[in-house]
Length: 314
Image 1 (cartoon, helix red, strand yellow):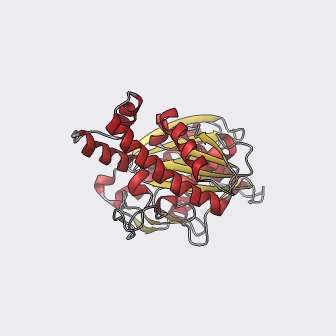
Image 2 (tube, helix red, strand yellow):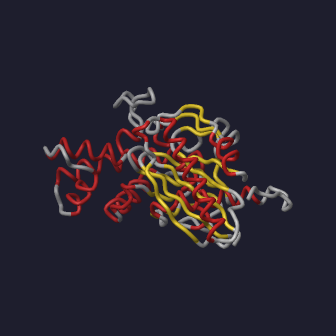
Image 3 (cartoon, helix red, strand yellow):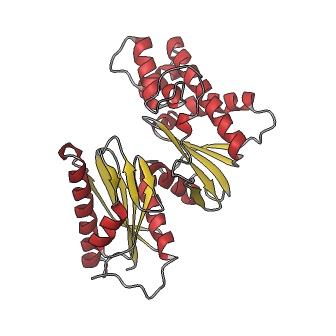
């Protein structure tokens, strides 16, 4: 059965799937990154995992995969297939595409994790049918994907969509990127959790706890939440002004708050919009499976540009 390998590499674990031509998931697997062993160990584990997936396909699906797609965190040079930097995984300038191509004997596409997840949401998730969309992931940090005509824009230097580093509070909190007042220092799940821990006096409190307290009517939680939503709306309206997307997709851990987030966010965006078009605001629908699905799409896209006579090593 014709299929591709899809790999989504996270900070602590790697999710994988073998995906058929029709998008059906034929096999799923998960493995630890082994980052405690250092960046070289992570690369070795990734290569071994990919090889095992190839072997599984050859044994159980009648033939090895035709191509592989891999989504990785950090800074990614997708054009040259290089993982430039990842703070969580510790690697720098790793030629992942070349290493995987050599190990697997098949074409490999490399993508940024959030942009790859955004690609999946745009084609098969909450943005399906939208010609122009903006996907924003609210997690430990904040990142985005700019969707256009069925694809996702990487930018001239691979940094397109880094909405978390729009300055929304000039002279505000310092950010590891070197600026002050970046959006993700105010509206990420990590930022909300930190603010709520300070306000509630509970060192272990997080953004989920804050959302629950907001729903329960806690005024201190409401204040923390409103500050985050206002900052998020400021950043998003800046992005809307520049990009004019028809659909705004919000995902990540903070989006799991549902209406507790989306109702005030929609109102806050509406108050700020003047001449800009109002996008359709929707929650992401694919959850933590978006990265794998997006990686499969990258691999399938790659096959469309390879002559049909191309053979893979068996």
